[in-house]
Amino acid sequence: MARIQILELPEGTGDDRPPFVLVVDEYTPARYVLGPDAPVPTPLPLLEGVAEKIGARAVLVFEDTIDIPANEVPLDEDGKPLFLKVHIEGEFERFREQVQDEIRKAQAALGNERLQRPA
Image 1 (cartoon, helix red, strand yellow):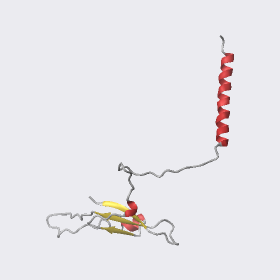
Image 2 (spheres, one colour):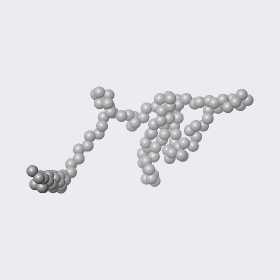
Image 3 (cartoon, rainbow, N blue to C red):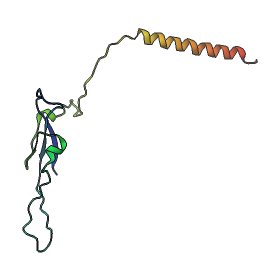
Image 4 (cartoon, rainbow, N blue to C red):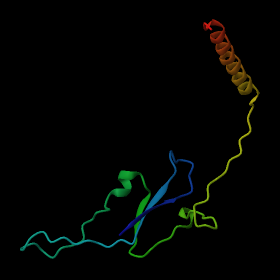
């Protein structure tokens, strides 16, 4: 079964979006018999005009397997995909103050309920 990959290209000064090439590998052309009196079947141009329709610079089609190194996902020692870990530092003082205010309000509301409840 054919595979579809994206090969990103370097961005130029006039590009309004990142340029790319669609790469189809492991492709096997299909032939269709249209009827008993039909001429010898030829492969249908399935990918004709696809580049223009999807905004690609080109469509490259190969019968062999083509590996694009940029599309490889790095794996850890267990064979699972590695994820990017991001450390974010922020100003949490205001957030802490807001949380403490909400806790005080909730505690005050609970205290008021207890005082108003008949014993």
